[in-house]
Image 1 (spheres, rainbow, N blue to C red):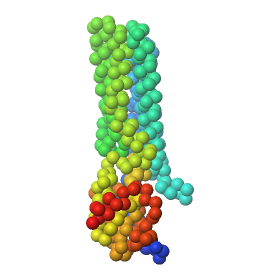
Image 2 (image 1 turned 180 degrees about the horizontal axis):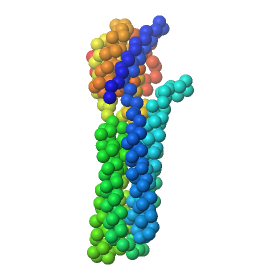
Image 3 (image 1 turned 60 degrees about the vertical axis):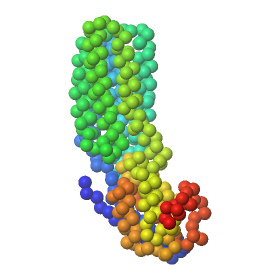
Image 4 (image 1 turned 90 degrees about the vertical axis):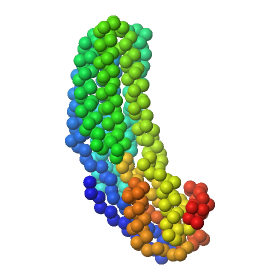
Length: 326
């Protein structure tokens, strides 16, 4: 995908000089067809799985259907967020609606926890009061789930590295395919042994697998909502890079945060006693941060005298930066 890069430099007549650069935008593609296919495949499977689960009284099938239903809702939320992220900024929403992708990731994480909680509670109840379940139908429906979830996972395979919502969808669908395989095995064993407790036990295994496969995504979604430095950005390397630029004596008030699940912003104050370095410095700085540090939206404030430095140093590491710049 091609992106435009438009760095800009600004010089002002007051004490502080400012530089502002825009890296290329990672505004998400619509992924409309991918999401539509994912929702249709899984939505249809959920309806069928709920029907068979009620018919044969299988908590394992109902648990898997409940989880798949939450996945469908999650896909819809991520789809809506991806669409909102393409809307242009306004006078009030100056960054547009890119942050909606972070809200979708957090929403999906909370939704997932609610789902596994409900599944786990029902499974525990059934574990102590097993109900007869025909193993054949459990196997048959779960086999369809392997195919449905496997195909959906492949739809998100290519984009999973670039967007936490895509990675979440991929991991959920891949996990569902593995869970469905486990349900097939449980159905076969119930058919052969008559062990009814295998059905609720399988549900508890489903819960464990879901939490294990989704934990990293849930943790990253929470971190993004708190404006933590994105996992793909090395904050120490960024600080060292800024401090090593020619003419930079100090770096402070450095902030790096996610604007969306694919866009990263940076603001920093650079003390340059030799004077404003010119637009070329800003252009090069933005290009380097974009291509080597995955930061798309850069704003730097150039200060030419230590006397004009901001008094409130939010990051509290001014002295350490001076050592790096020396």
